[in-house]
Amino acid sequence: MFKNKSYIGISFIILIFGIYAVPKIVEKLKNNEVVKGNRLDKVSSSSNEVNKLVEIGPAPAFELVNQDNVKITNESYKGKVYVLEFFFTSCPSICPKMNLSMLEIENKFFGNPNFGIVSITIDPETDTPAVLKSHSKALGVRSSSWNFLSGDKAYIMNLANKGFNLYAGENSKVSGGFEHSGLFALIDKNGNIRCRRDKFGNPILYYDGLDKNGVRDIQQDINVLLEE
Image 1 (cartoon, helix red, strand yellow):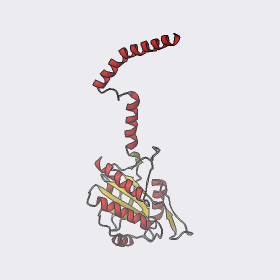
Image 2 (image 1 turned 180 degrees about the horizontal axis):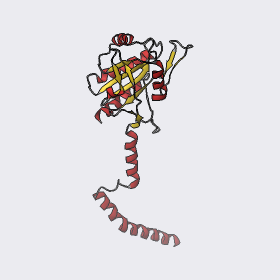
Image 3 (image 1 turned 135 degrees about the vertical axis):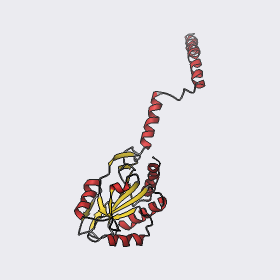
Image 4 (image 1 turned 90 degrees about the vertical axis):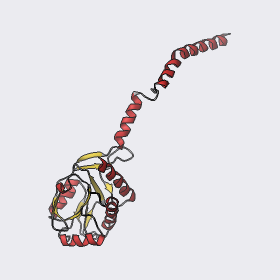
């Protein structure tokens, strides 16, 4: 008898809930409001924020000479998206791979007037404008917006280490006498360093110029910045 009364009570509660709630649910379905709500709106907003390229800050200013002995500055790239690296022509280790990655990027965006590349030597005493010009020809560079830059060594080392925070230094114990980062910096049309986030939502800062995934990622993000 007690169990029967319990079932009757539960049935009564369900009936009351149905009378009250079902019309409201139906109304929301009609108005397409079921999927809306503060929590879901916040998730959608944060997701968009994660997918947006991060603005790290202004890229350091620079003033150097290129392979044609012409002065090139950061202002020369105003209004352009560009990729920047530090390298040296006699590098026996990572530079050839970096050069090939840059060539792949150049080929992808060749002919686009809003894109360019900057390659700065960390061995300017060897890499004179004439040497850089020969290096450019040997690589098969076609773009007039890819500048190979040289200048004062102390200035360049400071630009790499303190300006861009991309390691470069002399080391007599390593082959070639210099060591440096294999990373590429991506700069937008307004002169700001930009990057994507990693899978944890943290800015990656720079792109791996030695890895095919890094090269793929920077090409995708160049496209994004060109459309901004």
